[in-house]
Length: 190
Image (cartoon, rainbow, N blue to C red):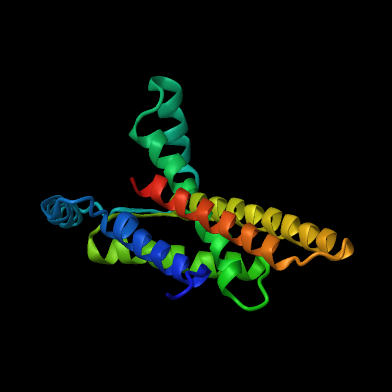
């Protein structure tokens, strides 16, 4: 039996992102087809499904929350952050010599690609606020990664100092991290 590692989890996460963020397929292909047709119609009428003014969507979502509570715009704001937390956590696990800058650059490239694909294929709209919120999620995920690495290093040093084998603790920490990531992915996709 093959060992599941962070690369496998990252690939599964990316497949989920493509399905739920770009295509937005939740079991009804007709809804996807209708959304594409609607976006094409809007473009023909002069509306581009493109928002390049920073914080316009964010302030509208916050205003909506203040006026009516948790509504679709508010949920969208939170989801734009939460869905990308695993990316900020997983990228450092799959790249050589991980760093904050490398994680953010890779995340930004992927997020920008998502926005361009949504706009070009009529699967959605391109919004600068989505990019900003997604990057916030990645930064939060990287912070979780740094906490995980710090704890893992402290555990390893503590066990090595006491003369015990740290392999089992490292594997337990890895299993915990992978389980937490899978839980977040399942929670956000459901």
